[in-house]
Length: 489
Ligand code: URP
Ligand code: ZN
Ligand code: ZN
Image 1 (cartoon, rainbow, N blue to C red):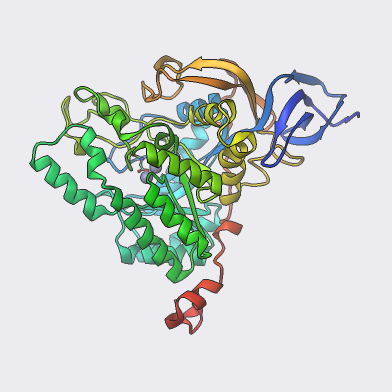
Image 2 (cartoon, rainbow, N blue to C red):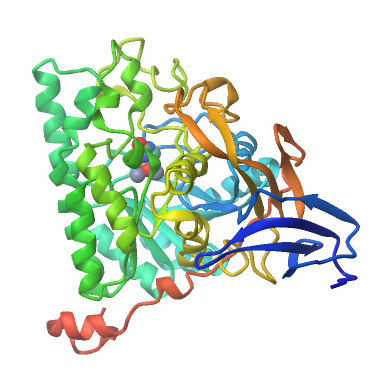
């Protein structure tokens, strides 16, 4: 078959979608996939993908990039370093955060993060808007305008002193999200339980990083999920629960979904591949593994895999939140901080996909189609980036990662491209690696070489889309006391 419009053919690889794996050539014209078939010809250039997998570039929908964080400091990365590390790990789209802190104007916040991304990003990007100061101006004037400008999702925190929202503020933001048609994402942990535990542990001299895991008592997760789900159901707003870490948390989500509520949820590699034991290192070393919520136990890992397999959890994101292990980051309070003084977060953009590929494809847990589903197609769908992103399909952007399923890599700090200076996954042996990555038809990674210029990534404007649409049914059926019609709220 001759396709005169084809600029590039990726020849003879095994293409995977959420439902099928098949051998095919992929034809690309300009920035777009224009042909998928056998025996394509007529392109100016070809890439030999025989023996390789041709997969959609990853879509990482939870990463903190160059962001003023809950710890009050900016993450270690720039947009250039973070998106470069994403590209080397096979990810071609990110949704990071534009973080409003108290006293900040939301439009200004977005302008600032846009400027950073425009300057540095090497792959395409969008923003979740963190709301931490839900004033009348923010909720009634700025938020609707920003949603209309293509920022179709909001994120809130239920814990962290600087950013947390109380229940009334949550309800205000939930209803603003609903009225604007935006997805509502949450870091859901019970703040009171955590701060009470922290105070008691520190008062008794338990200061090492491992006590961070104990301070975030398991129940703080399930309690916050339940409360948030209840409030979201009250106003009929779809929600996405970030970084599920416990079996009990996954169970709460399964139950809510079983009742017909529009509750989406993700987990992260740190909860699938690490446990709280990882924090138990000599001295302060465990700080490198500290994130919130903390890693849990082996039984939780199994429960999370099962929840992914059943669809209770739909995506795995990185929650990339890098801090250097020095005075600019983890050790900002001095060389011997107590666990409460250590910034929470891990680098993860680069290894999200290789870790999952190794487990799911090379070791056979859930398989290649499910890998494509939870790392690319479903996150793109939930955040309304699909069909442009997340699939190898005709008409989609040519964002493609070509994987060598045989390549074995031992992870080391030195091979990472972010600015954290370490990876908590160092020493792991992984099978399967993205050897070439294309963003909108351009080869941006070829083995160990980057050929994208900073600023070549584009902003992905999007509305909340289908996933963010209220059901309409729930307000009336689940809250009869409000059944004067949804207009009451
Ligand atoms: O520990 C983490 N995950 N830090 C990043 C901020 C957040 O909680 O998402
Ligand atoms: Zn979080
Ligand atoms: Zn996060």
